Structures are given as structure tokens and as C-alpha cells.
Amino acid sequence: MRDRAYDHIPYRRSEIQHLYGPNVHVLANPFLLGHLATLCSRETTQPAVNRLVRLLYEDLVRTVVAAEFPRRRVSVPTRMIASSPQAIFEGEVIDRDVRAVTVNIARAGAVPSQVAYDLLNETLEPALVRQDHIIMSRMLGSNEEVVGAGIGGMKIGGDVDGAFLIFPDPMGATGSSLATAIDTYKKKIPGTPRRIVNIHLIVTPEYLRTMTTAHPDVLVYALRLDRGLSSAEVLDTVPGTRWDEERGLDDHQYIVPGGGGFGEIMNNAYV
Picture 1: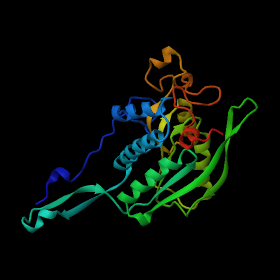
Picture 2 (picture 1 turned 30 degrees about the vertical axis):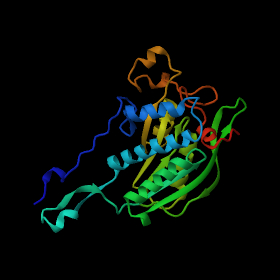
Picture 3 (picture 1 turned 90 degrees about the horizontal axis):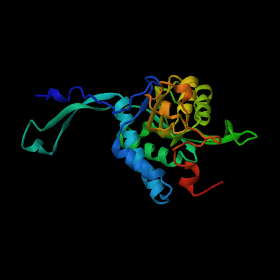
Picture 4 (picture 1 turned 45 degrees about the horizontal axis):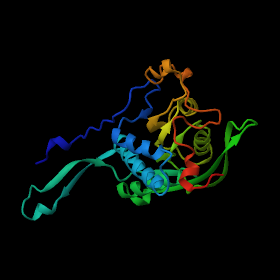
């Protein structure tokens, strides 16, 4: 006899209200927001920095898998089966037979992508999980403003047909680097992904404008939306209400409130 309570498992994300569209998910999790605030504090240094990044991304990846990945029904005898024929769990779980590719956007994406890769190997069939690597850098204009992104090298291990293509990159600032990386997969890598999912700690309104315009099919998950350089009147509105007036980037394209340059902070390399 099967307990019908586990036939279909609902999963409801806790999110803040916004008007950026249905593919944007800014999570509402006070536990994670507290750890993110600690991570972004100027007093927090290594090894606490990378430890907190791992903690936050473990929870973020679990959220994405629970919300987006397909399910299957299982029937698993427990250790009690020897004494009771009813000792069988039957219910809906994550389908292990799903392809997933996580992409390390070096430098800041290295630790998040490794966390995603390890968790996906635990959750899916490991033979269906892959990690790719892209080296990117911002291209700056005459006033040191970001004018684009360049790819310095790639190690891509095959096609992405039918796969969840995941980009775990801590800071969604301008969106130029990630938009370029996604373009590369769409135009140069064989196969059509099942879904493309960007996973961030912090995003800005500017990033969301770039990403939803350049790649409206992409899902965006983030722990926090930073629009700290907006006016007081704009900050009083539901995010996205006055999107064109929202500002989260300073003149050098760093996020405010933000947490500094994570590529530098996570690697203790300030060049």
C-alpha cells in the first residue's frame, strides 16, 4: 500500500516580490541573507570567505535542483523490510537520469562551480554530470568602465544537448561576461540545453536588464538584489516597478551595497 501523500511533492520557493519577469527568482531566505551579509563585510577574510561561498552555494544549488529538475517515482525497501513487509518508501524524488553541465567562469566562478559539480554528482548519475571551464575578463573603456567581455580560453568537454546548463557565478553585475559565455554555448557548442540557469549571490537591476534582454529564455536565481544607488523614492517601490531608474552599479561597475570584487577576494589576488 502506497502513502499517497508522497505521490506528488510540491516545492515552493520563498521569493521577494518583483516585476522583472517570471524567469527571475530572488530568494527570500533570512538564514542565507545573514551569511551573505557576513561574507560581504570588510572584516571577513580568508578562509572564512570561501567557506561561506561554499555554504551559500550548497543551498542555492539544492534550491535550483528541487525547483527545476524533473522527478521520478521510486520504491525503496528500508532496513526494516526484514521485520515488516510495509517497510518500503514509495514517492517522488529527483530523477537521476538527467544531464547537467556546470560552467566555471574563472576566477570567481571556480568555487561555486565545483560546489555545484560535487552536489550534482551526488544527486544525478555521475556519468551524466560534467564541469566546463571558461576564462573571461572584462574589457574596459578609456574611463575604466566595462564595455564588454572577452574569452581568454575554454575547456568544454562536449555537447550540451538535453542538459541543464548551469552558470554559478557569484556577482551578476553588468551581465556582459555571462551573456557572452551563454552566446558561446548557443552558437558554438553542439546541442540544445534543456534549461539554462544562472545562479548568483547578488544581482543588480542592470544585470537583470542585460540578461533578460539578451537571453530571455535563461532562468536567474539569486540570493539578493542590490540597487543601492537608486533614489529613496525608487527604493520604496517594488523592485522592477521603476526599473529604468534603478541603479546598483557605481561608475566602475562594482555593485553597491555589494561585497567588492569576488574574483579578487576569493583568490587573494588583487590584480
